[in-house]
Length: 109
Image 1 (tube, rainbow, N blue to C red):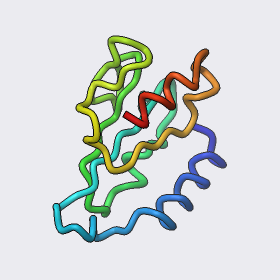
Image 2: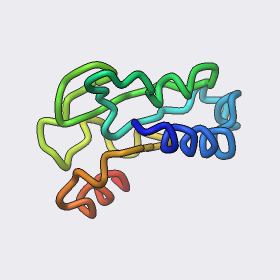
Image 3: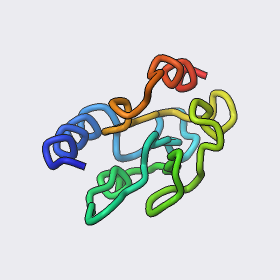
């Protein structure tokens, strides 16, 4: 991931995701990272940005690889139950998704 994208995501996380977890007291935020696979010599991950936060990180991608917890067998279907995520983040996936609006509908699920 590009350094500037990483830095912008870091700012978003600092602004919108409290370190201590949900006010509801349920323990940890469930964070789904859409397009989490790292490739080549890439070293930056959203997982690393979230270190120190009270989160349950779940990285998904259409390809298996480093930083992927579950492979999306269908490109527009996140392998998670409906309403199971508190936060869905994605850094650099949407420019590679032909029907990005289908992904947005899936995120809303």
